[in-house]
Length: 175
Image (tube, one colour):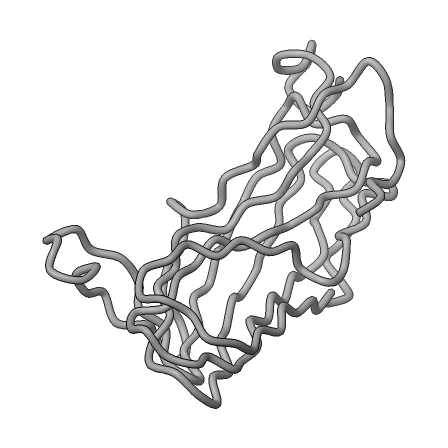
């Protein structure tokens, strides 16, 4: 995959979304991963999880794109066919006061034989554009699953690769 708007001497970092999720709509089941006693969200078809108020980190290279990806695993060994969908309400820019407007939708389609609890990772089909985006901007998102074959899918995490140029920022809302 070609990463857009490459800025040197920036480097790539992960912007973790997993710990900030709140359930909304039809929530996934919070259940043990196999018999481990460790719990995670188990998505069935139609389940969704909302990620409100994800704040863009201060070391983000302003204006660069985000490559969002998902880590997940099937709960049983079977053939899985489905689509993960990520809807993002475009960023509220704290620095400029630009209001949220368009929703960007991106998908990951999968189809094939899979082993139980074998971690999968894939980039969403659409790169989230960073055009005119600033540090401390806010993102709201919803992750949902449409599953036509296979049992539930276990969410391992969702994050975005972002370009980072220096630790933090010099001021509260500006680089």
